[in-house]
Amino acid sequence: MSSDSNIVSAMGLCNSIHMEADGISRLDLPLDVFPQTVQKLILDLAAYENYNVEFTIAALLSAAATALGNAMQIAVKGCWTCSPSLYILLVGRAGLGKTPPLNFAYRPIREHDDTAAKKFKEEWDEWQRRMAEGKKKPDGGTDDPCRPRLSKPSLPISPRRPCSTYTRTICAA
Image (cartoon, rainbow, N blue to C red):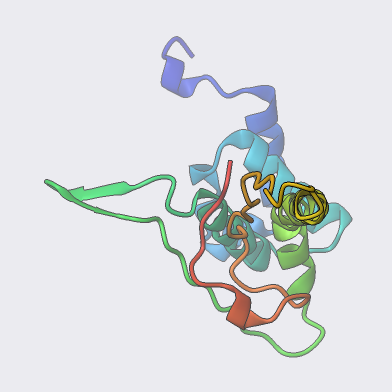
């Protein structure tokens, strides 16, 4: 093993053994295209949470594309670039385990969006309070601070929010 390409890390070896033992290597999934930490995550979710490997991979890829949004561009050819849009459809009978991997993959994005919404609500309430106080000045002038703006959510569709509130998917850093 003198060549760097033949050196296998301990995590890589564990992932390979884990894939072989669980029969994942027979699924014709190129799990080795992912970094070893992502491989370990996928394999651990399959082993400990009983997540379907295919659904987990699809959910993680979709969440990564959603998080990137329009912040990154893919150089297709020459000057032709496009956003990393990825549309997925998980197909399976009821109870097969499609939702848990999606919930796991999108949890950080939803938490980010919820935090941004709470911050906006606080800024909005403060702005409304300042506007109400400004109109009460004896000289008739108003203190018009900058109106707060809510950045568009990272998640295009959420069961907690109606679809009509979304215009496009972007991720605010």
